[in-house]
Amino acid sequence: MQSIDTSFILLILSTLLLIVLARYTLKKKPITKLQKYFSFMVLSVIIICVGLVVQKICFLLFSTNPIYFEGFVYIGTCLFPVLFFLMSACFVKNGFEFKKRYLLLFIVPILNIISVFTTNTHHLFYDVYSFNLNEMVYGPIMYVHLAYTYIMFFTGIVMLIKHTSKNSGFFSKQSLLIITGVSIPVIINILGSFNFIQMNVYTTPISFSLAVLFVTFAIFRFNFLSITPIALEKVVNRMSDCYLVLNDKNVIIDFNRPFLDIFKVKDTDLRNHPVSDLNKNGEFPRIESAIQTVSVSSKTVSYDIYYKHVKKYFHVEFSSIVDKNIFLGILILFKDTTQHEEDMKTIKDNQDMLVERERFASLGQMIGGIAHNLKTPIMSIAGAAEALTDLITEYDISIGDPEVTSEDHHAIAEDMRSWVEKVKTHTAYMSDVITAVKGQAVSSNDSVDTFTIDELVKRVTILMKHELKHSLVDLNCNISIDKDFTLRGSINSLVQVIDNIISNAIQSYNGQPDSIIDFNVDIKDNTLVLSVRDYGCGMSEDVQNKLFNEMITTKGKNGTGLGLFMSYSNIKAKFNGNITFESEVRKRYDFSHITPFVLKIVLICCIIMEQSLYFALCFYRR
Image (cartoon, rainbow, N blue to C red; front, side):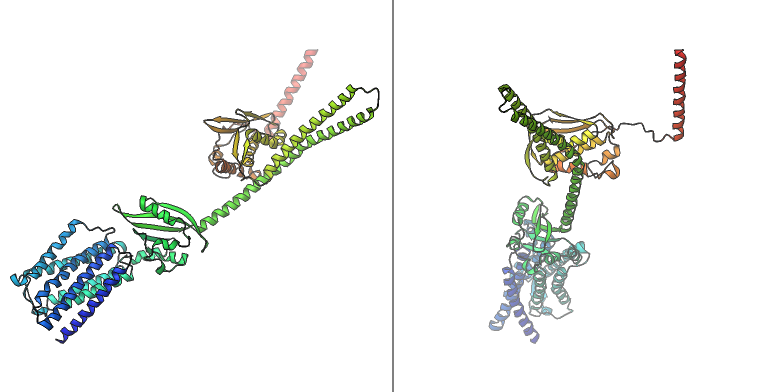
């Protein structure tokens, strides 16, 4: 009796513990499908324990036949294995849905329950009932019940083992706890059935309580059976990127260690909290709208953010988690792009520096032309001033002279007016030169202005005038559209691009005099086309393949290769345009391979021919 009393006390304690666990489970938010199956498991064990407690109390106080309570006890006993199987299936299979065919699993338990309630009539479940299991005599249906129970338990355990082995090759901590817990009642009942140990009716529910305790610890210690295999857990915690996993209710259910380390948060502030709590201070902009988009359309959404608290850049990617067309949740991946952003900033700074260097280099080439362009009008203005001075002196002397008529005064005034008009023309030209040079000299290439084709062509011709004249090259400007046609963008950038292309065209002649470059402005297919055409040596196929793709030059040490490369970038970025080219390599005769000896032979032959011609001419005159 003492053992029975001790077992009964343990049963009461187990019952109270299960009730506490059940209340705690149901209070845990949000309630998932897995929690529901687990709660039903706990409830089935509570039914067993409460039934046995009431059975024992009624027997002690009223000598009530204990078989009357056995039917109530077996409601939990028969349902527990099926509920464990369903919980294992939900644990293993993402998006597990209870289907009508699963109701077939309850046929055997229901028949067994009915058999227990009617066992006094047919004795097919119990032939002899006793508190001591070793004194019981079972009917055939009891063995059906035991076989079905073991099948459900073993099937659930095998599902867990197979699932964890498939993911990591060995068990996760959660599965080990669950398997250990469920194995306790199975092993005890097997040993008791073969009389290896002494058992009473309280042994099984107490062992079930231990199983529930193990499962509960696995659930609440490792976050609702969200198993992460040990190998996978180590991998994700060593990732440089971090992630969050949300369930279908937008609640954070998983994350890796780098997320906690980078964003300086605690795991208790994340797990089982709505993702909206993460963005209370607006530290993760657009996260709610991105989650909404992914939840509705299952499309991948991504954008870049700067997290000022840790001074890092992230590329955030939202992806839906779907299994067999069932939406399970969202994976939010934070890719650290800080190094990439810093590298891009360094590249941009270096690029800007190279652009400035190229711009100043081109300005240096223009200095001589600018001086020449300004020198001519200044000398003309000086000459006009001298002429006006002479006219003023002449007019001053003529005052009071009776021989000077009014017609003479009008003639002097007309001469003055003529010289003033010439001065205006020269000053206007100088103003245009200064405007053009200022536009290229001042670093304002990013400014957006509205300008006309006429203004563009005028600046190009002014800035290239000296280089063209010095190289003995003529620039033919053919404008096939209205000169007042307007463009919007950086005129300075466009002038620099055109000047660079014209300069390359000039150099293609290699100093050949009386050369021509055509600068055409036209509209084709509603697209403005600015074309520069030369008739020089052309480009080799190797240069053509690399043009615009990298900084390449054919000028050796005299070139950087930056001009056309940056011209292409400027047209793409600032005008949404494009640059294309056509080139034909022209063969030139190269005499550099001829040796001095051959040259001497040719020279001697020329002298002999010249002397022969001289003697023939002298003979003809005689």
